[in-house]
Image 1: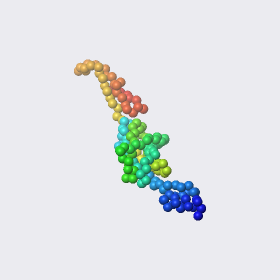
Image 2: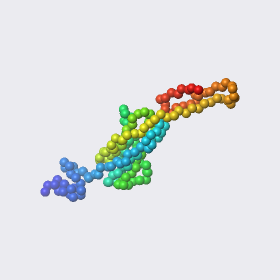
Image 3: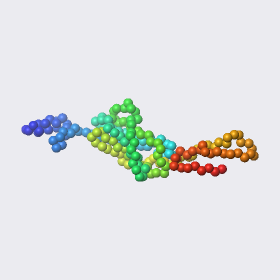
Image 4: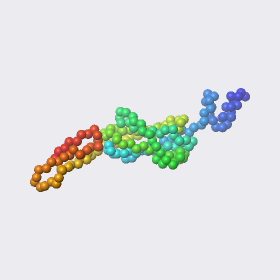
Length: 173
């Protein structure tokens, strides 16, 4: 029995795989389940919360978890953090979240979540959503003083605004 064969036998008896003579520890691939977004419909001012459950049967923390949102043209990557920072049991699953605000309206959004335990990389399937609609503008009208019946007055709507920054406001009375 050569030295290499002896080492290989010892490594194999410890539950370690040997690939091309290089010992590699057995690793369970991490699992991402129940990806979701809440709410599923909002406007440009809505904060959307994306969640996923990360499970690792080796009880290994992820080296990263990232949310990837596509607006139909480009991917934007957001970091995800633990929903409960005290949860360290990865065997029974830990919920990770990312809150995203400022999504543009009328885009077809899809997303997926990707992670690694330092050995294996995995990602969820592509998910649909959220739906982002137009935000209603806020009309603020200032008259400057009390309005008297049957008298002319000036209305100033310049303090009105639209949270959809790409929209311009027009006024009509």
